[in-house]
Length: 417
Image 1: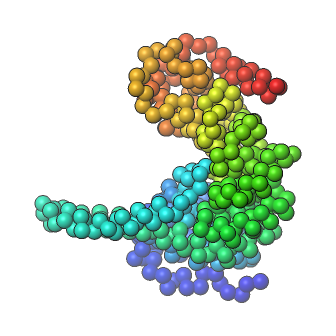
Image 2: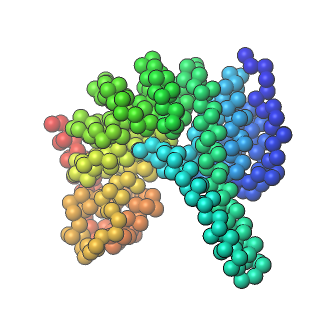
Image 3: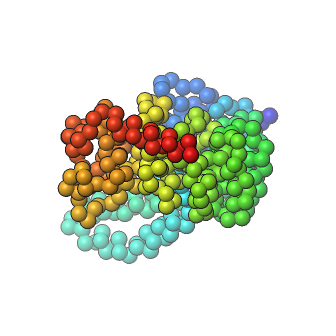
């Protein structure tokens, strides 16, 4: 049992002089104390409220790095509840939103190079500031340059602060909470420089883990670390009787360019019929379907009729709030694949679209004004395809449910073979 208060020294930090997404960070201590107490008012837990302030929409703020020591100590304190949320917040502080880096992992050198480049441009900035038309514009330019540098430094400093805490947090892989074990495996996925230490720990964790979702998280983490020597270990789970482990193996193998029939078959099956979402599989908010679509997008099979029909079947079955993340990420990936970039010559009519494009358009037109990610609608607009529901149905010249039934029949026929 720990005797020390994990928030010792909290009031010694000059929070009122640090920035977060909503201004100065003098409210951060209150959020951290609420997290320690484990009680809150309103819809969102204090960890989510704090995340909204210090890593709003994935943007790491100046204040974020200063919360790391307290979050680490709270994560390690067995007296506290919901410790997986503290580790999840450390993931966000380290990398921002994971969907920006999935399915290919994180390279910290990119952010470090960006910071170095910004610092190297100081002379150019000074000239730009000196060329301001008046004092007001000069001050605006000074503040703008300073903020760019503050933000870039926050990214690198936040990541490095979490990386330094990784050895201490590794013990959580053996905690009594499957959610905490899984979130710790997730955290390890984002630090390739620590792979030599993390990989043996993850292998042992996966081999002993009783929760399918947590073990799957560990396999995905191995894939994201990108060490080729782990491929034989990952591959042994491809024929596991447990769907979560088969899926995680297939997903991780695509990270190494391995996308044979067995891998594609597993991803195609799961994108259509994902296992139940759990907090234990914490990548991409637990979306097996969305991650399967992302992995499929890395293969040569991504735009085949079989893969597209599987994604459509999955989208049709994942409705309402329960399937939000599956629907959001799968749809975004599918539309980007099927309607890529800006066409050299936009189609003049529905008949000018490819077979898979027609299938997707008919499916969307049959969805009773379903909400789609903005990127999905943007893809249709780039291809000069109508986005209003009524116009889309006329454009496709379809009868209700025709395309859903066609996709179901096509995918079911493949499953039977």
